[in-house]
Image (cartoon, rainbow, N blue to C red):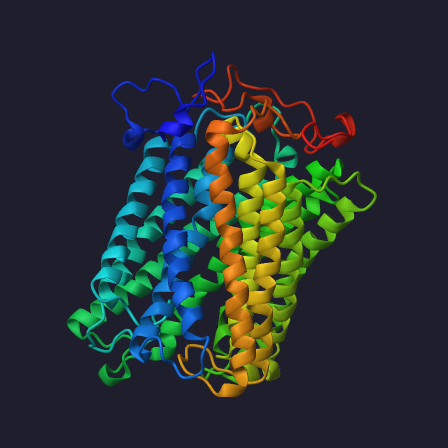
Length: 543
């Protein structure tokens, strides 16, 4: 962080403040903790990306001639576990949420600063155990830990991987608890629920899922470990257990976990679209309540992952109905973002390009999700590459685009420096093109019958696999570009000013980078959210 501290100014801010005996590793400043998370999850992103690269290289040829089948099982298992539990789940809440939630409500810090630091240490401990697991042989159960694979007494480190995710889960719970208490108890005078930024509504809904859902996963993985170590008959049918019970418990958390990943990204897009359309967000109340609706309905759809697992037809029909229903609040958000842009004065800045890319890719992923809510279609495409494509359109195409949109939008606030806009636009377009080249062919592969998790396949699927691997190379270049020019901007970027985008929101009413305690005095909110009718129609940086 030496380069970051080179962002010198006459005044004191959180990057150059004298903390005395408190180093970065002992800080309780929510902004510094956010940067610690940023460094950590960026590392895990590239670790998971490395496994993805090996997977795509293996699938260049039908023969399975790069790695053996058991090694391939470990590659896609560790890719999923690292990307989901150590990047996708914490990315927006732990980085952008940590940095912005107190500033958006006019507070000096989160409600529990020491617990916030503890959550990062738990995340580090869990991540360290996962790295140790990978270096000592890995795990081959897939990211889902399905039994009886995970309870079979084989040589892979299932228990250690489960413990690492168990510990990281407590980090998620503590972060969610911190956000809930902060949003309830520490809003500035005048910051009513109806004036809160939609980013806060999204993180609030996410925190509810984290607090209520994560313990179920923790208990489930603990039972897997206990059964594996002490031969308890919980899930293993050889010991009198029920493997279907594992799927019910796992997906009761893991489908809401999809919304832990995507809801904060929706909040990011809800901040960017009004800013670069210079309009108040259309249907603010509906967008806010849609976040809560997603959080509630998300707990009622878990068994649509189990249509071919042996549940009754009647249960499947109920879960199919709720799976269609949960798409409604997401559709409300997409409609309202589109309506916000309608007749707006749109600026195609880098954050806006990422946000629009999010809308396109998330909509594609959501529409294909309706295929999977249909019982007949789901039976046909289950465990094919159609599922892989759908999942990545939501999680990578959606969430990662939203995360990068947020990083580009708030980077001037975080560092006080601007990045090169032309490079930002190039990266956004490269990622969008590379992503579609990578994953759209996988819809066709899945529909025509190529199963997922196989390291070898029949030759008729090779052309589409080659196209997918070529697209992943373009995508990798696109992901590397922001890291390069973000680091470049720390030393050479232009000074940003306090509000380079002319944006609404309390975080833009303090300095860039912010002072240690965010505001010199507690702000008083007297305006409605997204009051762009009262602000200039030009964006200072790109106007």
